[in-house]
Length: 375
Image 1 (tube, rainbow, N blue to C red):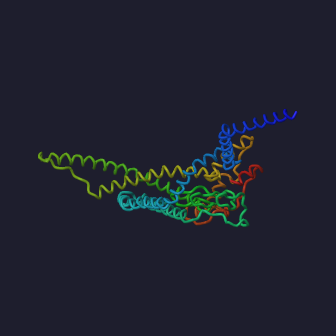
Image 2: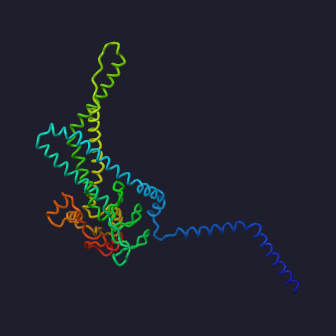
Image 3: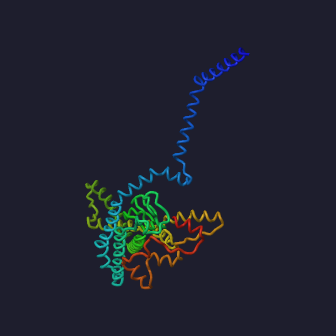
């Protein structure tokens, strides 16, 4: 009996020893690598786990270096863009005063001279005024104190209360009230307190460029034909210079003042026409947004909200829209009929309606209210 027990225990000890030796020399490295792989995967998942992660979040993470580069370039080149706008606008104004105005006074009848003088200067004053105000007026920033505002969310970058329709500008590195976008040509954000100045500048600049292009159409073609004639005469002069032995006289040449005049007219017309097309498209887009009672950022948010409600069989309604005419009255600050002249057609520094911290909303469902107040 003892012999059997001893034999059984010896066999078990030998078997366990063999398993330990096999695990140590054969299976141990593979097991350790597998354990390291499981541990690394668990760490990676714990670091990257986010219950709100979706395709948009993944794309934002992938394009984050591009966003960082664009933000820093826009921040540093904003002054350059503003200087470029001032230089180009001043160059066209100088060409009009030096080249075109004397020609208009000599050739146009008195009623047309009076019209160009009044409309041109009114348009120029409106452009300069609204551009200056759009640059120097702050768009509006929410206060840091929680007791001063009805916050609907917390900005994850500022770690501060964020009112409705407020968004964080990565270029200014601040939250902006009713932010529309950051405009590099203004070197400033377009928000609650300077949105009207920005749109008015786009409107009157487009009107001025269209006015210059239409009124200078005949002058442009005359100047363009004169430039082509200058090129042709230059070729003929070279040919005559090469054949001086035949006694040919060189063709007449244009003076420096004539060449500068024709090239300046062509330059001004091409610049005004290009700006009218580009800025006119931007102005039309913002006209549609203002009519709908939304900003550029809210346009994208409202489209997603509209698709989400459509899947549930519900209809989307913008809570900040008061109808087309009502939206324009709120945007322009028109409270009386005379304000269409004193606040729209004339320079005015009146503030917008409201403080940008609280917004009156139109009736809508409770589910849509919760979603849209947090945008």
